[in-house]
Figure 1 (cartoon, rainbow, N blue to C red):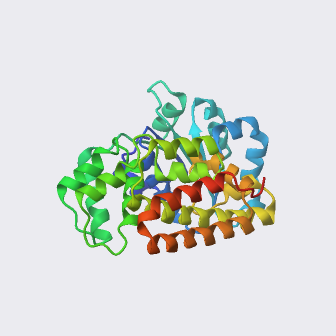
Figure 2 (cartoon, one colour):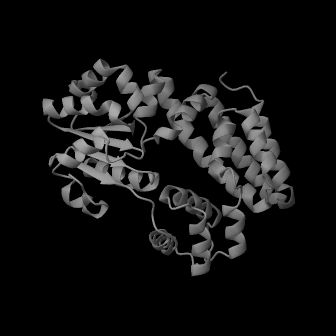
Length: 331
């Protein structure tokens, strides 16, 4: 059946099959977190549709096996298309207790078999995620700044929202950058916001850091060359780098124990977004727990150096990033 976004809370405990489709990745992520929230301690396993199609027997075995789950099972299938329609019908007909199936799909036309299936059946939920209006994004932005107790004008809210292209995932990324920068601040100026959200028209802080950790030297150097970093940017980059390095350390420790990179990625909490899986795998293959700990120590040391010599921030951070590209770690 067709379900509106605001109706999800009413029906989420009564259904076990959910299809989210559309281009608004941020809204889809929010809804999926909403669903998983009903079973905070449940096991969550994430698949790409391609993985299931190539290993259908293993997929069904993992669902039916009690050994993988203590209580309820939550299965997220990313990049869903009509190709998985028959498998979903099979799951529905099996009427397996204690599973929640969540499909994350891109745009599905009206003629889509998968969309028709979920719209038609009363025991299935079909939720479209359309681009957010500027009014919705403005309200989300205002609520964010109220929560972190920073004063902001409507003009500055508009400045942030215009950058996001109608997707709250983009908005969340921009707000996260501002939050990292604004520690202990009570207000933020238009100039500061412009510097932060215009770090690059082509890349984000996260893309720079992800490629650096994955040791994609050419990509990292291109991003550095395409940006004119300020001293303020450097502090944000380092703090974002530190948060990412700590996440990789946690995953690296787990990977070191189980020696299974897919299990490590799929069981990560909070879950790793499907678009990030490949680069996180690359990062885990490039770093060990020991080398990532050394990196975290180095990041803290670079920040201390910047505080002592602020005018050298750009040089210190650029050298630090470039050194990571050519320093031997795991491979």
